[in-house]
Image 1 (tube, one colour):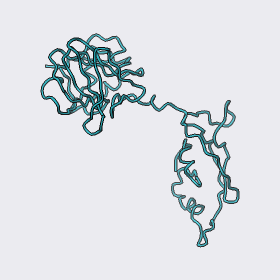
Image 2: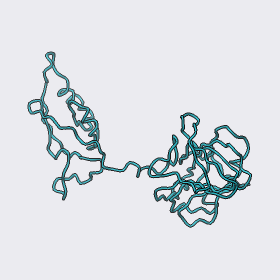
Image 3: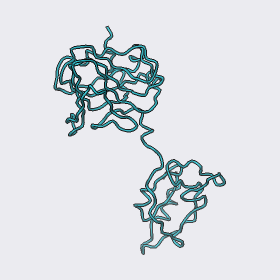
Amino acid sequence: LSGRPLWVNPELNQSDAFVAAWLPGSEGQGIADVLVGDAAGKPRRDFNGTLSFSWPKTAGQFKLNKGDAGYDPLFALGYGLTYARPATLAALSEDAGVDASLANTTIYFTKGVAPAPFSFATDSKVSRRPIDGPATQEGAQLLSWPAGPATVRIGGGDLNLEREANADLSIQISYKLVTSATGKVELLMEGGANKGAIDATSLFTGQTDSWRTAKILLKCYVQNGVDLSKVTAPFVVRASGPLSFAVADIRIISDPNNSICPGQK
């Protein structure tokens, strides 16, 4: 049941039969008439409907009108089988034809990895190794600064986070402090014309060896001179060691009532 054609090749491959019934509303009995057999197991009625829309071959196929240049659907307009006229399909490709990572604009680190299109990169002075997260084996990365300035970043994509900032969204960081900061720690995003950074030193001092969560309003970045109109690295930490902490999850969330602006008096 759906209101439009859908790419469902994996489901088709797992099915003995497949019916596109659209949204039947009050006519559900008509669907039952062709699906439910009589006492002898024979069809009560045969199908006579055919596709009123062309059916896509991939999830990225948008030319589906008959007569369009390059028209090549999986099932053309008017396609339809019946009990009297069945057919067998060969296995269909389960390659969706689209890069699902392009839809990820809010999750920068989770379950021990930076999901595509993002990647976790450090300069040569910061060491990084997997450790157990709060709920997942090797679900975090331990970042260790030397006795000097260094930067760690997660980059990828080309984001404009101004709308998210205006909507009071936040960046949530799940982390565990291992060695407290003795110098200044700054949070920023890279890619745009930055004029400053957030003083986040308070987030990286105090109790060690316990997991904690910081929720930082994106507006705080703007207020501290970070340009969110063009972001190629949404998570950047600039600090001087010694400092070490583990990160388990970094993502954009909506929780303004429990979010903060570090460094503000």
